[in-house]
Length: 177
Image (tube, rainbow, N blue to C red; front, side, top):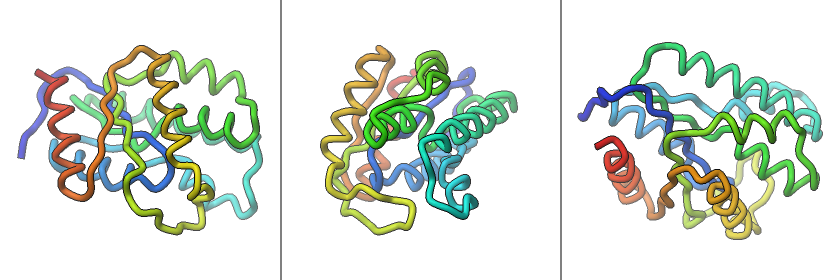
């Protein structure tokens, strides 16, 4: 096991639905022995008790930011985030053709030191919270465009199973050295 000892380093694992973000976030947390923050949207939507609406995305953003702030204030050298505001921006614009200004502002100011953009090269798995199995490649391209626009470092991570995990570890290590 390799333990990170650098100053706080924020890594966001992102990409279209069903690309292994949660699994990879957990694996990276275990490998580097650092904190990971699960996707807040999953908790919010599971507890909602009704179909979500565009206004719920703002509440999810606020909850996500609260979780991020808690994690970043705990003195961890590195924190892995299972998505962040880029997911809300992309999804809001995809589904509703608009995005709340609060999400837009925070998306541009609350950036990561490194983004891992996961390729949609994994098989789709049904989940009651997932809703878009057919456009993952198109949505992947939207994520890429958004990350290009941020002008922050990102790496595209592809491959299945341990190949995907090893590529992510290699990418992170290249930014920590």
